[in-house]
Amino acid sequence: MSKMSELSQVLDELISCGEKMIETANAIKKIFSADAPATEPISEDKPKKAPAYSKEDVRALLARRANESGGQFKAQVKSIVKKYGNGGSLTDVPTDSYPALVKEVEGLTDA
Image 1 (cartoon, rainbow, N blue to C red):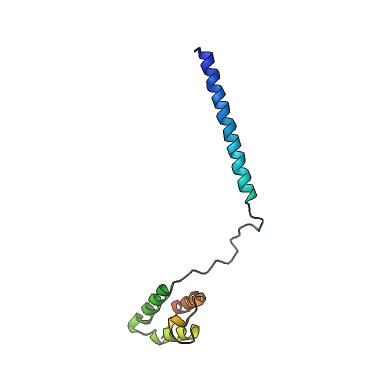
Image 2 (image 1 turned 180 degrees about the horizontal axis):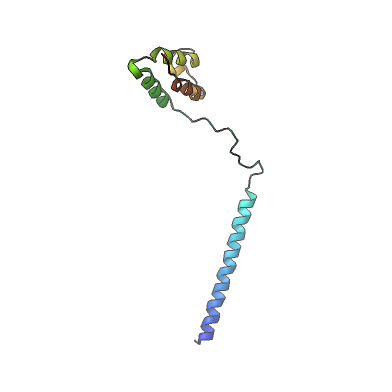
């Protein structure tokens, strides 16, 4: 095979690869433009979602805070749990109240 023939074959393959790349790029563009949300753009001003706490996480925080400084916050922790759960037990507190309860318990400063 002559050099010109080889060059022609390589160029044909290169053109074919380029055409396939263009087809692929157009397909990807089409997929992402069709899936683009029609809603407002993401903004940093939106309120952040409250962190999710498991019952074990909250229980550990309550125990740690109640036993801090020789138990000086024990009564306050019990009072806060009673406030969020009518029975005065963590099992009575609805899970959607965990973030507020945690925030309040973490904010305790005086006995």
